[in-house]
Structures are given as C-alpha cells and as structure tokens.
Length: 400
Image (cartoon, rainbow, N blue to C red; front, side, top):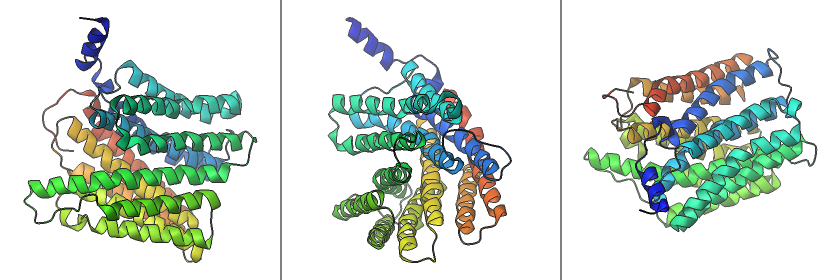
C-alpha cells in the first residue's frame, strides 16, 4: 500500500473525536453559542450597561458579529457537511476542522479586543476563517469537478470581501462601511434563496412521499431560476446604489416573486411536522424581508431597520436553526421529527423576530430587551439540546 493510499484509508476510517467528524458539529455549536451570547451583550452595550472599546462603532460591531460570527459559522458548518455529498470526496475532519473552528474563534476574540491589538492585526486574524473556508471549498469543488456549486464558492469569496470592507472602514482607510453591511446581508440573502430553493422543496417532497401526501412540492424549474436571477439583480442594485426608488421597486418585485416561489412548495400542507414547516417559515421571512426592504425605500410606512431585521433575525436566524436542527438529527441517526423542545426553539426565534420588527413601529426599549431575551433563549435551548448529539456516537433514541 502506498503512502497516499494509507493516508486515504486513515481518513476514510476516521477514529478521532466524534465532535470533529463533520463540519456541522463544531461550527453549528459555535454559531449557536455565539448567537446566544452576542445578542444580550449587544443590548447591554446599546443600553450603556457595558462598554465596547473596539475599532468598530458599537452598532457596527453588532452587525459584523451577527454576520461574520453567528451566520458565517452556521454557513461554514452547512457547506463543509454538504460538500462531500456534492463532490463524492471525503469530508474535512479531525485537526483541519479543529483548525478552522479555532480560526473562527480567534476572529471573535480579535474583533472584541481590536482596540488593543490594532485594526491591521484584528483584520488579519478575523479574515483567516472565511479565507481558509474558501480555500477548503475551492479545493473540494475543483477536485470533484462539481461546477454546479461554484456559485456557493463565489458567495463565500464575496463574504471575505465584505468582511474586508468592514475592516477597511474601521481602520479609516476607506469609507466602505455602508457597502460592507449591504454586501454581507445581500450575500447571505442570496445563499438563503439559492440553498433554500434546493432544500425546502426537496425535504418537503420527501415528507409528502413518506406520509402519503397528495401534494408534491414543485421541483426546480425555469420559474425558480428566473426568481433567483431577479433576486440577484435586485440585491446587486441595492449593494451598488443603496436606497432609491428604482432599487426599492426591484427589491419589492424580487420579494413578491420569492413569495410566489414559496407558494409552489405547498408549505401549509406540512404543519404536522414542524421540522419541515419551519423551513417554509424561514423562506417566508426572506420573501417578506426583501419586499418590505423595497417598500421602505418607496414609502415611509416601513422603516429600513425593521425590514433588515426581518431579513437577518427573521430569515437568517430562522433558516439557520431550521437547517442546523434537521442536519444534526439526520447526521446523528435520529428521527427527523421536531419534538416539543425543538418546537419551542422555533417559537422563541419567531417571537424574537416579531418583537424586533415591532420596535421599528413602536420604539420601546422593552421590545428590544424582550426580543433579545427570546432570541437568546432560542439559541441557548438549541445548544443545550443539540450539543450532546454532536459529541456522542449514536445514543439511544431521544426526542428533541
């Protein structure tokens, strides 16, 4: 047996820690823990209870850490787990996976202490995780000749760029803060539209088939591609030009088209299984968020902040929880069923989004605290229930 064959055999027959067996295990837990911690920290900073002395303004730190702390960890966990299915190659696991997770953690520490270590060092450390993730995914896609998923690689590269723009602004090198916020949110919205457009109808069709349902969620078709194209164009307009009536119209149209796309998947027929229904709810918040973001540029009845929180806290928060809970259950050999505790997670994150959007119409401090409380409870509950599943081999059946 050659040395290369021996290495391949060792990777195939993994004997390391269960927690480092697949990307979802450490990175989904990182996302959950950071989401639970960062929201109350931000509200405490916003309320003046504690101070943040980093290079970012406090509100920018909040946006940055939600996108490049919480969401980036969840995206990394999903993609590293999905890539082996896409390419037929072995997963990133063991020490390389541990290294990626530590790079993510180093970024969070560097950003918090950025005033002490300086903007250049903070940027260099914070950019390592996503850069390493891009290189890992690029290697797998190229080696597996899986060109169909090249857009995912492009989206990750844009996230690296968006993070770099945040740091350029913080270091007073260029005024790129506004475009950094828009680009990061736009890329994440695109990923929800693209990946959600695959998994939501697929999992829904599977559920219909297993339950003898009369409905079949419509598969990817020309209409879906047209909606995705319209969404990309609207998001590009928004990133490039910010607010404006033309941009608002494009976003509103894209949101309504996504709503029509969602209707084709017949989510209202899946209410007997929360694990499927919540995927439709997450996509609903994407559709509504895009629509209302556009409306906020056309009419003052909707605030931009409320629409953006429907996209971020609503669509991204809900969809990440939906995907993380399902992936952990499926990949650890458990029944694909949302028990009472998992349903509580979904309810809490939904209430958090509703309260935060309500603040845009009735700015009462209590709404912010309540929203943060429900959000933190949702993710703390997620970690408490699902963390043990990520380090145990195959426990007896339990109900999540």
